[in-house]
Length: 413
Image (cartoon, rainbow, N blue to C red; front, side, top):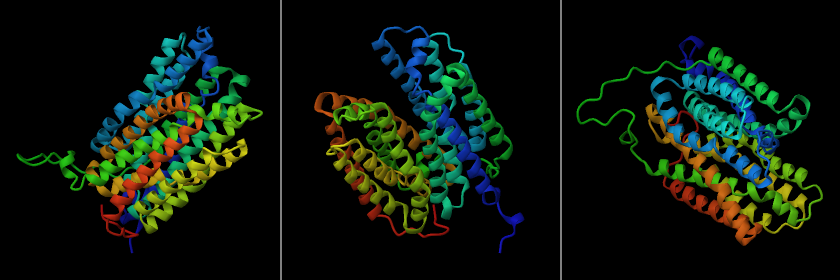
């Protein structure tokens, strides 16, 4: 029986690491999403007066964060493999604290957009936390741990807009950004002094004719890996394609308080994901990540069909909650499959590519949803999203059927 002294830092401290990462991911996601309710007001405060221009600049400012995040995610993953994942989290939390505070000092809309770009460039705490938890947690518990982390991320997405709706009337928009920066600075301190990462293995010189240590050549079977990149992108594409049309769809359903009902619809899916993420992750550790991923994708695809046929707003809220229960198990399973499909020395880099794939889906999804809804009707968006989810289901079923049964404990990479 192993004594605490004989265990590696990853085995001794993984639960504390998980708690710090979940709290850090929660606070940074809250900071990134709390501006949603008052972003148009801040744009107007910065000197934009035309209503159409306010909407346009608000969209540009919000989307500005995702592009640099998508580009830099593999870089941060690779640097994490080389120099340590904790260092990347320290960088992200300090960078986010600085960027959020500077946003509160913006004097015109161009500065706001540039600072949002800076936030995407310097940030990435949630994705870095996913990499650290995936690689520093015992493999037999990785699904559950990633589910807990996913719950923290979803909780941040749920709480951010609510906090953003409450604070500005009480303390002002600029002070809201300053408080967000201060809270993330606390995350920086917790990350710096509480996280314990396993020592990095010494790098060995690459001999002539030998594949570099961090290259794609070290991944023997690339098909499952590439399939997960595609599924991660299509998943976020399908999820985010619904966001731009919810309010208009509720107007078609003649909802009395459209703004409140739209918030309930968006929160319902996040709440369902929070409830199910850790439990589905734990189930995946027991019966296999491919199986849970395939079933969750199929359930999400089926639940999209009645969403296109609802006749009352409460029906949409209920269906989005049920869909959130299914969505909660997807990203943890994707991360676990990637982690188990690659050598340890490239895990961070490959999870970084997965994060970039998700960001690409987050950028393209709302654009596609808005286009389909505007030209072919709101209900068409749900049908199209169902088709994307069904395609993902077929991909995971195909590759999952070719994989051997996954051992419950101590499974090989």
